[in-house]
Picture 1: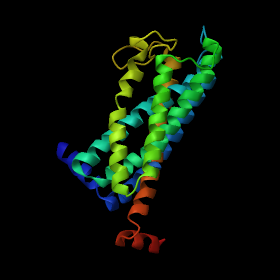
Picture 2: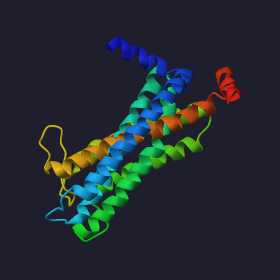
Picture 3: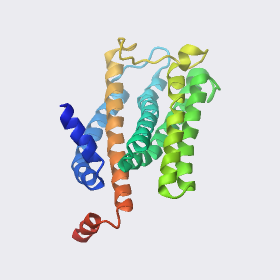
Length: 249
């Protein structure tokens, strides 16, 4: 198993092999995201019982929570790709990091907007400068900073190193987001889903959320691979295999 993973890791460093193999993965990610998201939305909006405190306003969590999960995990993936690029000089890691940044920024934005919409009926205000919300806003600015830095710097190698360093440094904000509700006084409720504890909600509410989280991750896989494949074609435009590919089409 370890040898297989090691071989896959090295093969994914080849732009040509990455492009070929991910083309086979895309339909599976699309199918998985459609099935999971449709199932989660139907169960969450039509069958999950109304919350006894928040009424039907709680249903926005089926978008808010998965988006918040992805906002944080995508940044960690981006930082990990930055480490791989800086340490092992694998250029495909930078391609993946570049593909991740806009998706992570979009998920952070969705998380902030849906959180504000959820907060109005729950807290009586659209925004509070508490620790969780403020650290999520900082995460959004970190994403924008990585995207802007890549556009502002040249050549490509310099931009890649600068973006990798910013992503790695910014990881310090992730544990702040996660533990902010424990470290400081905040209106934001603690996590409803913990790997080490039983969910703090009935299965009729929990299962739709699980489907939505998995569906968002499948959607992430599809969108990142699509963007990465397009970037591979752009960077490898002068190589023989890309010319042959375009000629066949």
